[in-house]
Each structure stands twice: as structure tokens, then as C-alpha cells.
Length: 281
Image 1 (cartoon, one colour):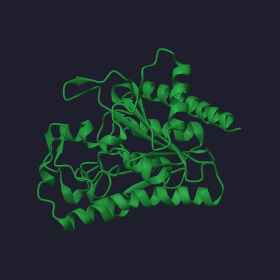
Image 2 (image 1 turned 60 degrees about the vertical axis):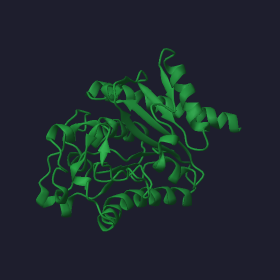
Image 3 (image 1 turned 90 degrees about the horizontal axis):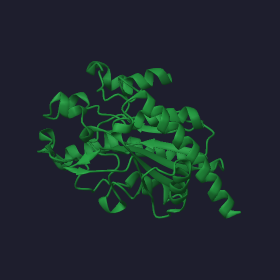
Image 4 (image 1 turned 180 degrees about the horizontal axis):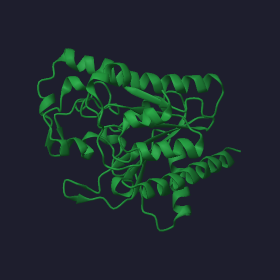
């Protein structure tokens, strides 16, 4: 599939607008895969992953009992994250692996055994379509949507390791400015896997790039919240450097914000890589 077609299938507005997807359900089985890989042969040391890229609810699940407004909310996806990741693909020549399914159907950034793998409640919103999920349906969603995403990322990382390519895994997310009435002041937060070296270097690079920038460390989440499955499952096991980037979504809902943050991240990711290389030398 050509990249332009793939982007159109993933989101009606890849420029970062809070717009849902409009896809003919009759085409879904043959056209929309559960995972999309962009620029698989990219030569950048950075590999991007976006496990909350889409708010798409596959046709068998209807609307999960939610309104159209609720399906556009952050509970269904990470608004702006895919747009930033796609811009980074171009700026860095990086490959990107993106889920095409809403985290309300299944959350690709959770362990298969996690209680919120298929959420019944997201923030303060109940998900009626998930209330009576039996073991067979849970396994069906894992098989159809969760496993393909992680298999695609694992295969890409495996090919790069076999080829001897330097690899830094970067997962791209967004978060809400307010969560349960609590303000979140950081425009960007960084979360590290077990080895915090690259994330520390990226934090330093961001602060050097803009000394006034409020960079959250393990904010607004940490590994203790169970939100680092993709990061740790693929980086710690293979020994890759890695980081998880969380951008406050009101920063990246418009094209200018997407472009600005992508450019800043491209600069700072390269700076962090260089700093680690010098330290190792």
C-alpha cells in the first residue's frame, strides 16, 4: 500500500487534527490490517512505534456503546501522536510501526494478562461494549489485533539486529492536559525502560534545546502504572536503547504544533544519541 493511502486509512487527518476515521466497513477485512509499517527499510538508528495511533473500532464491535464524541476523545487513542510519528519518519528516515485499532478494543501497550487490556472503564467513561467479554473473545482480540502489532515490531527489530544496525526504540504517545480534574503542566514527559541512559540523555538534550521547557521525568505516567509494555517488551529483551515520549495533546492538535514538536524531537533524539556515543567512547 502506498504511504499516502495508508495514512488516509489510518486517520482522516494525519496533520494532527482531532478527527475520527471514516472507513467503509465493507472494505475493512481486505484493506485495513491491524498494524501498518511505514518506511520499513529506513536507515535511521531510530525505530518508532505508535501503539495508540488510531481510534478505529472494527466493524464487528459497532461503536462499543459510545457516542461519536466519546470515540474522538483521548480514551480511544492518542490524538496527534501518529501525526508527530509520521513527521519523524520523514525527518529521520526512520521506520514506524503503528496499530490501526483503538485501545478501547484492545490496548497494544498492555501485557496480555493486564486487567485493562480490554478496558471496562477509561478515566470516567464506561465502555459498555466491553462489559461481557468472555475468555474466547478476549483471546480473539489478542490474536487479531494485539499479536500482529507486536509481531510486526519484533520482526522489524529482529531484521535490524541481524543486519548489525544500530537501533534505538522510540514509542510516541500523547496525554491530556487535565486528568480527573488534575492539571498536567508538562508539555512533554519522558518514560524510561530498565536502562534509563538514553531517556536521561534525551531529557538533557530537550532542556539544552529550550532551557525553559518543563520536561516531565516519568510523567504523567511511570512503569508502575503498567504503561510501558511495548517499550520494555521490545527493548529490554533485545538490549536496545529506548525511550517513551509523551506529548501533551493540546500541543499537537494542529499542523504547526506537529511540525514544531517533530522538528524539536528530531534534533534532540540525534543529540541524545551523540551524547551517549561520546560517553561510551
